[in-house]
Amino acid sequence: MKAYNVKPEDWFKGAVLFLILLVIFQLGAFLGQAAARLYAEHETIDRLQSRISLDLQFLDVGNSTLNTPPNQYTLKDYLARLNATLSNPDTGIALVSIQSVSADNTSANFDNARLTPITLQNSEQTVQIQIASLPLYRYLAFSPLAFFAAALLVPVLMNIKPARKIIQPESLPQQLPEIAPEPKLVINLNDKTIGNGVNAVTVQLQNKPLCFYTALLHYCIDNPDAMLLHHKDIPPELTAQANKAFGRLMDLGHTKRKRPDFNANLDKTLSEIRAALDEVFAGYSEEKSKYYPPRAQGEGSRSKQHSYAMSGLVSSDIVIIGD
Image 1 (cartoon, rainbow, N blue to C red):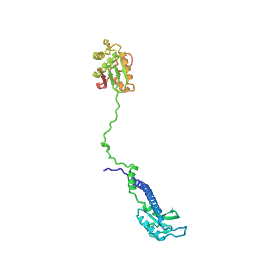
Image 2 (image 1 turned 120 degrees about the vertical axis):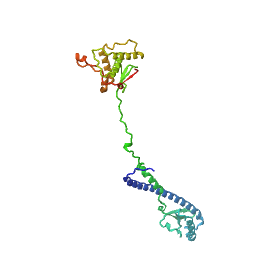
Image 3 (image 1 turned 45 degrees about the horizontal axis):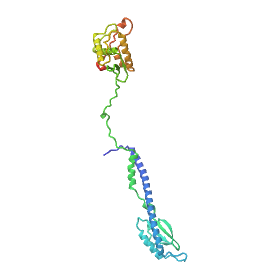
Image 4 (image 1 turned 90 degrees about the horizontal axis):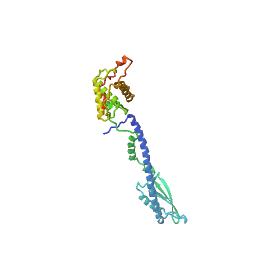
């Protein structure tokens, strides 16, 4: 069984709305009943008028030309017989008089009746008759249809809906906050590009800086405390990693040249790597810092002691495709 969400103040509003709708629908029902009654009366009076017109030639209604009065006995008898035929309560019609001769047995129900005068014409003279009709209010009745229609429309107009089951907040599944993707260095050896894994921005590197940077990442992950100085040759392990990356490029068909000297022009190689990272991680300066080979600071002996190794890297920080 459905429960409905009805507030206390809605009961009063609903009752007022129900009464208004009931009055409107009942008035409509009264109009329909009155129209039906008037139509039935019209049909009955037409038939009665036709019957009297046919019977006039047999009735002694007098003659004004010959100055003869109507035969009251025969007319009263005729009126009585017609009224007996019309005595059904549903008919609601009675013949009151013909040519000033009134019926004796007209029911008391017709005391407040509506009188309808009718003039009939025969070959000799004009005949006046009067017909009584019961008041219209006698045929007006309460309509159950109006009651049920008002009762059904009240919830619709008040927009009363079944009460929804209240779910306790603790039973609702916790909606996890949407986590924005975190930029991560992506090196694709298949097309020699680096990207951030978040958007479509990629930069293509030459063979030497690409291989050296790939090797540098592996070396820094394996040796988190390493010191790589600008004025010294790169460690053999780093050279081996760079040669391995270059060999992979050869396998992929990107080059047929001999392996480059990764110690030569180291500053230029690092500058190309930094420029590519600046472009790829534009807007992500904090994330870029972990992948960015530190620049040498100062001049002379101080710059020579500066390491370009990246600290704090782990293998999950980078993605290498085609390795």
